Image (cartoon, rainbow, N blue to C red; front, side, top):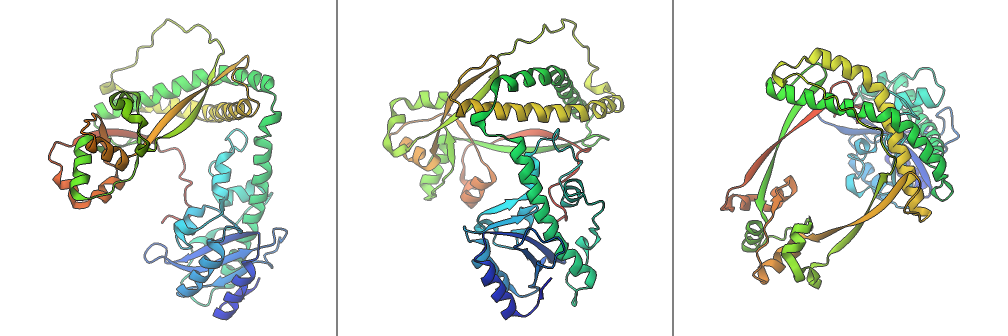
Length: 431
């Protein structure tokens, strides 16, 4: 476990690692709640190391030039695969969007369906203990004081082993993913179809009930003016919409080059007519494939359920039912989605549009750049009638010019309900 503090030693090791094909990397952050600073970079190049003796600990606290050196030689290097857990957290301090060829074990774990890897969360500690046969991993130093120097022996031990655990988890996830997603060219579509039929018969009633319970919760919470309950939270967001021609004229008048993709719906295509073929538009044609089950469903019951009025909904009873059916639904739902994904890929690779159980159909999504469409419409004196959502990106690009929109902006409120029973697994350290 080489613990390096001298700038020249750290630069020499970084130069050495710049020749590697794959590195397992972790970071420790000082004062992450108040003044986050990169404290330590742990790097492992030998996945067979089980002791941490091959982990290099680079002390870069308040040495931004060393972090920049690591970024320029390692993080932006396309030839080196960098493996992190919850990579979006670490790369905030290591290059952000400039980081290339980054693998995230959190995202890898999320690709594995719940029925194959049924875990309460996808945190590194959970993955280590579950996948690597380690009974208990002490993560108390994770939130320790990484601004203090010297670092304690316990901190150094913790830091070196995190890279080892990361390499082990990465290897196991690769093995599980390889088993979960066989080669589409050799998939047995008949066997997959039969498996899907078997699973769907159990999943479909539960899926319908889950959807009904959630809809009743949402309607009841809105009617009873509740934003919070034992099982769900209700949050609102406001979408700002303005008609296309108003936005086009504003950007022209203000000299703003506004670039974002506009989907040409059938209605917009109809309005454009022959202008859609204008080469200045550079229309992008994106193929979309849809998998439909051809399995005949059993006859639905004609008995209509009578749900309570939203104003009198019993959230306790409804929540208990949700809690009861959620685990089984979650596993079945993950298996259904996994099977559909495998079937879709296999049918595409094997060039089959139909099987006894499924039909594959394609459709085109046409997209153009807003600036190009606006320029064409204005130069041709052509009025297009549709609404554009003013996303935060568009609002930022417009800046103060947004206040010059001389027509009413439509404000549309949408409500989102999130389950409180689902653990937040996005970040191991809140930030």
